Image (cartoon, rainbow, N blue to C red):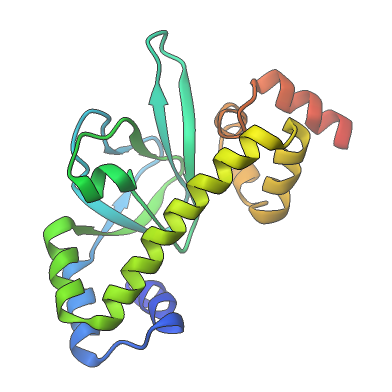
Length: 190
């Protein structure tokens, strides 16, 4: 289950044998079912996750019970409530499996031990957190400057698999629109 993770790391930063062994030791393989909560809002996230198979999402719930999806995890990516994980503070959102998932997870202390033991993994970790910040900034920019149709077209071009695996209401929420608007856009484009 560690093959995909190690391949992705080593594409950027070659790991020596001890670092590979630590990755295999510290990244715990888990399997979770659709709609299973990985990390609950209001709690300090315990893990950084790597998604081998399946789709996940981070969402928050307002006082009226409406959910808003802020992140969609796809195979081959890391996810958690990044800022809360790093700062060890309660997360504002819930991490849930949107489909059946195969994941690897690592605790904060094990991540720090791996970073101290391997310069290559340290550099890779910095890259992961930089990418998370860049993705958050790009999403905020898109929500502020792109039309709903443009945001949908961008999602189609960058992550077409999401459409087959997530509920339309979750995709609409991620795109910053109502499900009815997404349905209208999809009809107009077909």
